[in-house]
Image 1 (cartoon, rainbow, N blue to C red):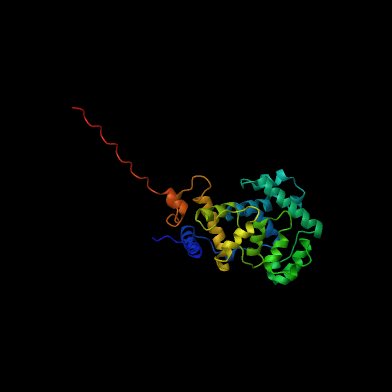
Image 2: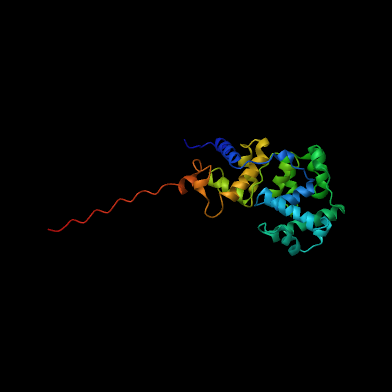
Length: 265
């Protein structure tokens, strides 16, 4: 099979191969969450899979009475519920911080069903919670930048909410996703302080309709085969197009036998 050099071709090939390898339930059937809940889910989701994040998110609902109980709990108490998610303590602190900020601005935990509104109206309502009065005058990309000023929300959460709640086109980029895309040669060096630039380089070649499914497939692949240490390249469906896979599955050259020493007469 000839090597694929075009990024769009490679991403199409990746999407097709991973979709065949990891059949997904129809994402449209998943119940949509209000914006605040989607932000909290995004904090659970970063760096892991949808299944693991959903399990942790469900535990929050089952083991705490409501969002207010989570807000007034300690980081340790919330982290214990989130485990075994990695960096549970850090995630717990972000969740508590988000709930504190929203409560202090609104004295409630309902940001509203923004997905039912147009972007302009949604941006006006978001402005009440993210300390910006001009979101309604901005495009979606610029509005997302303003949301990102909310200190408990990083670029991944912004992209996730854009993709899942605001109807925008974004590819949430976390460490496992970046790892897979770097090994494939789609991304080069990723600056953790400028993930938006890295996202931009792939968002224009991934159709909006495929964005959510692509995000899920890459995350599963990062957990199942393209792990941080000792990736299982021989079992990878992308190995023939992946520079890392090609290198890791390359057969070693047979060593030439040493010549036999001549017998002395």
